[in-house]
Image 1 (cartoon, rainbow, N blue to C red):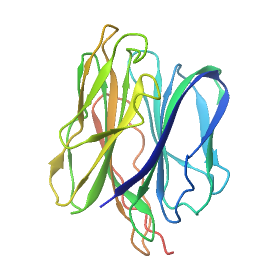
Image 2: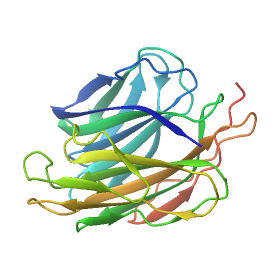
Image 3: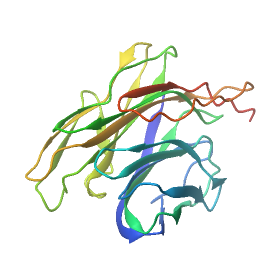
Length: 238
């Protein structure tokens, strides 16, 4: 299973590039995850850090309100003080709200088992279900809402067993995460109270500890709401 280590979040304003550093030095072999809420569409983006280099996009989805939701990751980090950078080479500048999170999955880093994304219009969010075939996974969800946390009296409530991370530093956006020890059918939920606009999106990714050898297969991105993708494990040799 995964173990949460740290999170950092910010509301960057309107940018074509931005960066933020983890508060504490990243531990060797950690898995790093980033969640972006970008206020535009048709964007060309890239993510990297100053210790490990280029990150990999897990998915990019429209939220139905003109925003782009992106999730990126690095399966196995080197130790060090790490600054993560976002670059928008086409379509910017846009309003960027984003969070970075570190988790510990094992000595070979992390792998991705499955993912799902769902655009929402109300105040109760549900990612939809994924069914795991690996007994120990770290469930990480990214939530974004149209309502401003600071300006519209918005309160997030995490789903059952989940812990909110990065809230309320990154206005309109947060992580939630939990460990599960057995195979089964899982989803991520969140509810809100707000004086602002309802709606947004929620995604869920199941991470697990990578094993030596093997290959990586990532299914193509999906265009529709509530989509499920299976991603074969990222298996690292050391």
